[in-house]
Image (cartoon, rainbow, N blue to C red; front, side, top):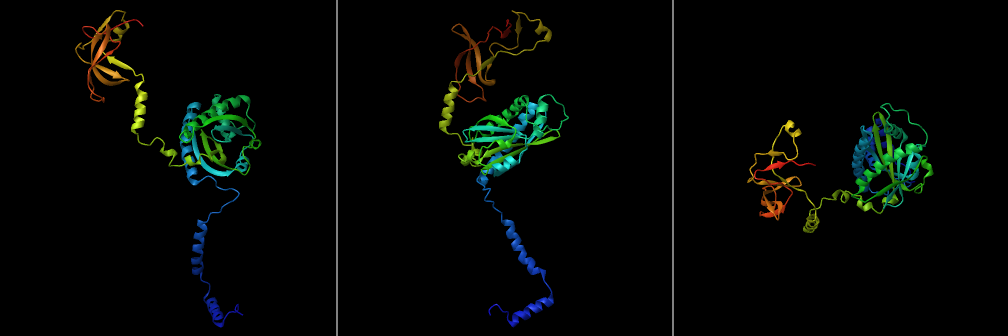
Length: 357
């Protein structure tokens, strides 16, 4: 009996029907529900996000810089402008990655020590064949990409591209881990290569290459088990901060000890003068070029091209020498007088003695 409506409830329903439907209460009730649905994100348990957001942001920032450097290096190799842009950094399963590729394609199996397992570098034929055509001296007009596996000669040419890619990858990752990258083999059918189980999570880093009016994709596939051990280093607080720590006394002493045994170039400028090209051509062995500099004028001593000391000419134990008189104002150090043997000529009036080579 509790499910029956009372007389007051029946009259209330009849009166509301006489007034007509009102949209405001329904809209007001729908608004919070809509806002709630916007905050809810569906989660697929078949594709768990095993790489954290911080690591994904670090990978994105790292490969954005890599894309710029690789584009510059590839432009220098092809002698034309090549734009390399990072388009996405996503997590997906290995089977989804493989079945999204074309067949045939350029599927490079990479070894990246000390990371576990293998990485994959896929170069789409739509951009690969124009690059090969450019390496072989092709013009600006691009032919439609061929749907066939690469020949032996084309594989050798592709090796120059992948070698450039691996070199820039080594520089991009050196603050995280010192990668030793190499290509183990190249396949044309991506479905024949099974580096991890089909449901294993991988990080797919996609680049868009633009060569003239031609565009194509280059994909780097990194299995999660390869970077699981170094995931702690993939954060903005770790690899971004390399090289930004302040110098300590211990590090400064270590650098100073290593510098003490370094060889530096030391040169003494005796004088300057100007002669005509006709006189220069007519110079012979034994000719003397006079200068306006007095023998008593101090000489400038340069260390690695930088003025460091002021010296005077002389001789020491039968060898031509200079004596350090002072330190130039811009150089740090204590003043004093030291003798140094140098290979300079000294005459009553400074002059350059012309000799044969």
